Image (tube, rainbow, N blue to C red; front, side, top):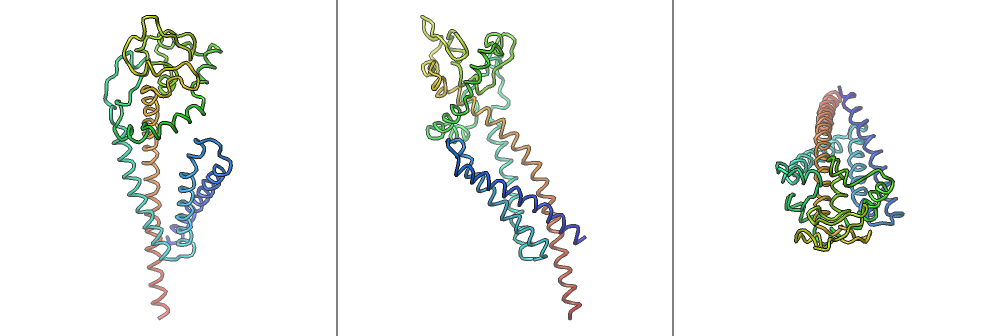
Length: 278
C-alpha cells in the first residue's frame, strides 16, 4: 500500500511539474515577445501558476519518492489550503455570476441580445467595466478584431443582419453589443458596421445612440451595451470555469487523500524501523 500511494503521488506530481514548467515557459515567452497589452495580461497569471505548480510538485515528489515526512507534511498542508481556496473561489464565482440569471428577457432582447451592465452583479461591474480596466479591455477587443470578422463575413454574404433578426439567428452577444448601435436607436443599417442616423434623429434618448461612431476603431466600444456584452461573455466563461473547478477539486481531494495515506504509512514504517533497530 505504501508503494502504491507513493507511486500515485509521484506520478501526479510529475505531471504537475511538467505543466508548471510549460506554464513558466509560456510566461517567459510573453515577457520577451509579448507586443500587445492583451498578451502581457497573460504573463503574471502564467508565471504565478507555473511557479506554484513547480513548487508544490517538488514538495510532493521529494516527500513521496524520498519518503521525507517533513516535505510530505508541507505538501499536504499546501494541498489542504488549495482545497479550501478552490471551494471558496467556486462558491464566489456562482454568487457573482448568478445576478440576473432568472431575469426574463423579452423576445426582442433575445433576438438582438442587447445587454446592459445593470443585468450583472455590482462586483463584475466594479472590477471589469470601470474606466481603468475598460480601456484595457477595449484595446484587447480592437486587437482581437471582433468587429472586423463580422464585417468580413457580411461582405462575403455569410451574415445578413436583417435576416438574422427575422429568423432569430442572433449575432454573438459581444459583437451585437460592440459592433452595432443598440436596436432601440432605430438607426438605418447600410452594411455590417456602417449605420445612418435617421433625419428625425435617434428613436430613444439612450446615451449609447450618441456614443456610436462609424469609425471602425470606435464603433460602440464605449457603449453600455458593449460592456454588457463583455460581462455576459465573462459570466458564461466563469460559469464554465466553476464547473471545471469542481472537477479539479474532486481530483485534488483524491490526491490529498492518497497523500495522507502515504504519509501515514511512512510514519508507521518509520516507527517499525526504530523499534526493529532498538
